[in-house]
Amino acid sequence: MAKENQLLLEQLASRFGNSLTSAELSRFDEVTIVVPKEKILEICTALRDESQFLFEQLIDVCGVDYLTYGQTEWDTEATTETGFSRGRTSHNDQRHLWDKPRFAVVYHLISYAHNSRLRIRAFVEEDMPRIDSVVDVWNSANWYEREAFDFFGIIFEGHPDLRRILTDYGFIGHPFRKDFPLIGNVEMHYDEEKKRVVYGPVEIEERNLVPRVIRDDHRYDVANDKE
Image (tube, rainbow, N blue to C red):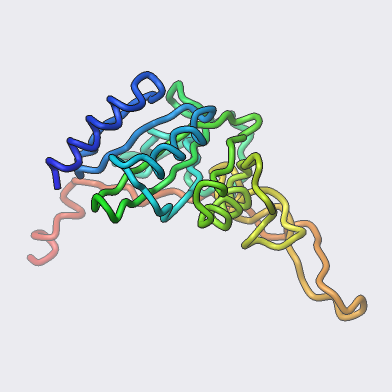
């Protein structure tokens, strides 16, 4: 499979050239290309129709939030000043540590004709995350794009019915964004007098969680404990 994926990588580079931001094989031998969001429809249509590709099926579309990407506070042997629970409200400006946009849309394709798979990544701006819908290229994108819209707030231009799909109609915010609090923005309950579900302010108390600190001194030596 490594040779086939290398060939696919070369075909992609030859066909699309400068239209690709990058094209590479991962350490797991997976082909990934990064494309400008303005080129997504053009490139996806070619990948579906042209004989050297024939990616006839879209198997997934998902959003990715790179906020705080690269920060590894959970992997620690010391205490932390910030805590780790997204359930707490922080007024700190948590920006990602790299120079790419915060959000990305990721597409996974499969070609049965060539027995190959491909991952496409397109970055979208944080202030107004928008990208063209690929529903007209693959019908299966319909619900996937609605899910990415629901969870991340990414707008898919040209989608025939872009609305929430898994959260409630009155839901506020996008729960897969990394700055969305685990306690949520509102809570709901059934009102016996009004005979319907009503919304109100969240009453859950915020908590700041701290990980277990790994210590290496003799107090935690298993061998000594056995003695």
